[in-house]
Length: 113
Ligand SMILES: [Zn+2]
Image (tube, rainbow, N blue to C red; front, top):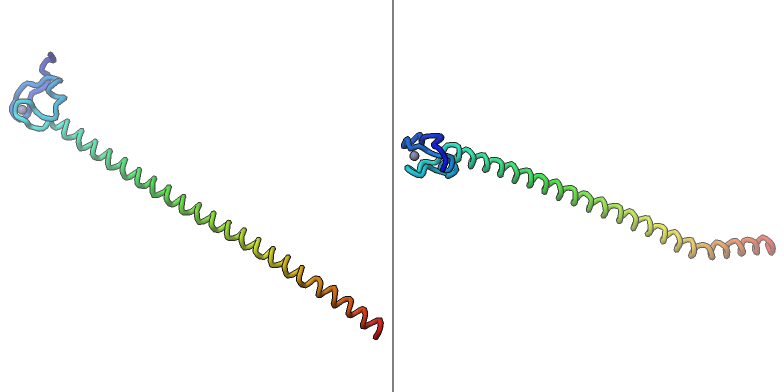
């Protein structure tokens, strides 16, 4: 169907474009160099893509871990602030009556003194 465009470098058979689409020579079975090269290229491309994917996954994991740490950090800080606010409120409410009582006592002592 196709005209011969090349001869096999191993057995010398005339090859058509259809023959050249096969991975190897239909007459002697020798792997065509362009097919071998294409397979090698595909392998290299696949390897590069895999490495890129791994690098991206690693980056994504790093980013996730970082944002998790930041989130935990800010949550801890918020918790800390809330804790000390509560401590302050509790201390003030406990101390305030004592303070007022002390003032009243002091005034009483000064008056009756
Ligand atoms: Zn051949």
